[in-house]
Image (cartoon, rainbow, N blue to C red; front, side, top):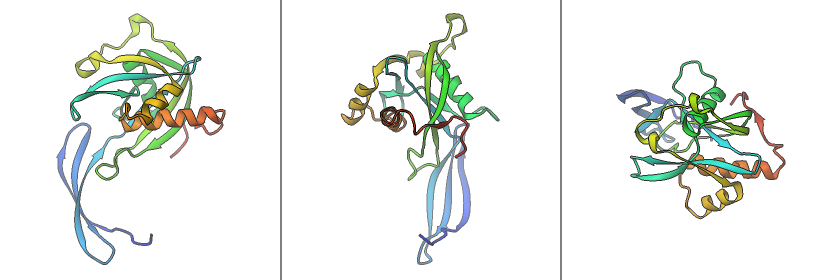
Length: 196
């Protein structure tokens, strides 16, 4: 591909703390100028936490946009200025699953919906898992108040993805990436602090 897709104008339509909706005028191959609307997102992190028994920590969470409860990874927004991404992932693991990990690796980075958003999610593999002491646990509210933590054998989680039981993109990719990394002796993992 040699075309540069010049952006002639960039207009913000809406902004909140998580994303903005923008319209770009973009020069297409052949010279046509078209408008493209998309979401500019703050970014997110997710955690594939695998315990010593080869089980993955998945949560059940209600999502208003799809009006159902989904299987998901412990995950959250990159919304603390200057916070390293692995620290954001550790925070989300503690807040959503009451878990901590002594070992962190970068598993994969994904754009879950590039046709409509620039959102990028960095998925980490967390191992050497322990529980957060009861007195130090985060108080969950709203949809997170009903989060349910489930430990599922990683191979069973792969089956769930392939059977269509897991539809959250980050969860599906994280489970498949973790199983692939495990099957390769974890040799494909990168340091948690690796640049993208």
